[in-house]
Image 1 (cartoon, rainbow, N blue to C red):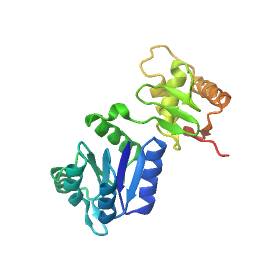
Image 2 (cartoon, rainbow, N blue to C red):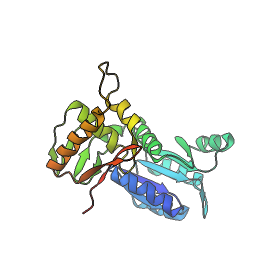
Image 3 (cartoon, rainbow, N blue to C red):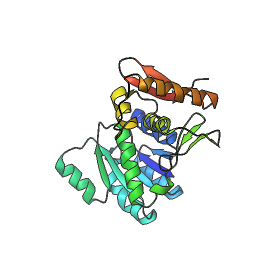
Image 4 (tube, rainbow, N blue to C red):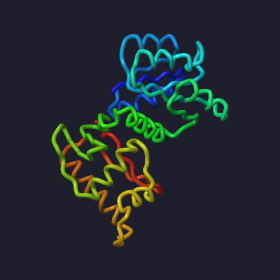
Length: 227
């Protein structure tokens, strides 16, 4: 699934592209309107992320071209223009969603998933891949080196919570809420640590190419293992 990112801030564009690619999407970067039009002429896209202010104009002018040449494409505006009037203008111009800067990358990914579901492509959302580990958010299937990996319910819930935030620390409180949500039975304060140890052992035994780091005073972080 291909996403066009029209953004002239180099570091931000690279951050977005890296996270999208690690989530299984194919990304094309375009820092100007001209580059974006060339990209649209050369290929098809399921979704476009458009920064409003570009060196050669306002990316709102791209939306008619997108709608004509890419049936069903979803458009999310990414911009520092945050007044109500700016948001209304962006949405009225044909955008499907509007996210103001600065934004949380996880919120952006959630909005991308939601927009793709509305377009009917959410069922084809690619799995998140870190190292040799692949996790399908929809089916909750885990694969390592292309082979299925079986986990117990809580281990699977923990992996889900960590891999959706790969490369970022997940607070202990968040992990407890997501792993043990809805459970009436009590659990010891060290239950999460024991669960992390079990999941880490399974991942190591299967040579998943990922590590789970303890982040002092915060929680845990899953990341690709360094060679």
